[in-house]
Length: 187
Image (cartoon, rainbow, N blue to C red; front, top):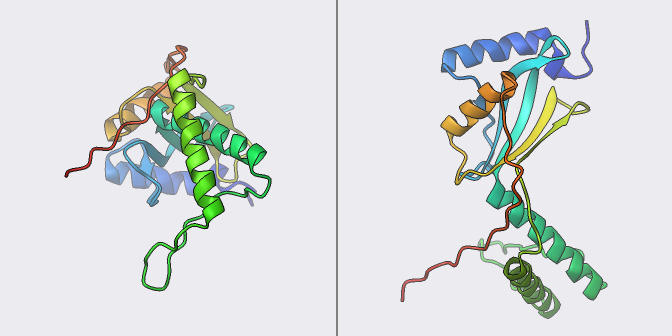
């Protein structure tokens, strides 16, 4: 039987179950350069409508979610002010050095920075913990979740998977706002 979504295929599920058993874990982190201590993409097994399925999860900190929302809003405001704005892309030359931004890109970058600082100071963007389920995902069922934790580690992932599968996950509905952390430079 051919499955249009491989995350529902019993062969794929068995393969992941065996891999998880050999790892001694309830999840498998997907090797990805985007994984950080604030964002991790991983697979885990769970039930959906009475059938076992692979969940493709993205779990990130509430601070990262807030920063993303703030940046998206700042970019939107930049697009309103600068009609030619299509995003700022940083490129490298053949030696791996950053190619300088154009004067307009520099101006837009400073504008975005000012908007971000203003939004954070006014605390006009607030976020709360959430879990979104995507049943039309291309591999299994997608889970997008943000938790109010300082970092995402294996202990946090294991707790999330257990509580998600046991249907005991309790989300904090408090609205939070965050400030960017000042970078410290040594003189």
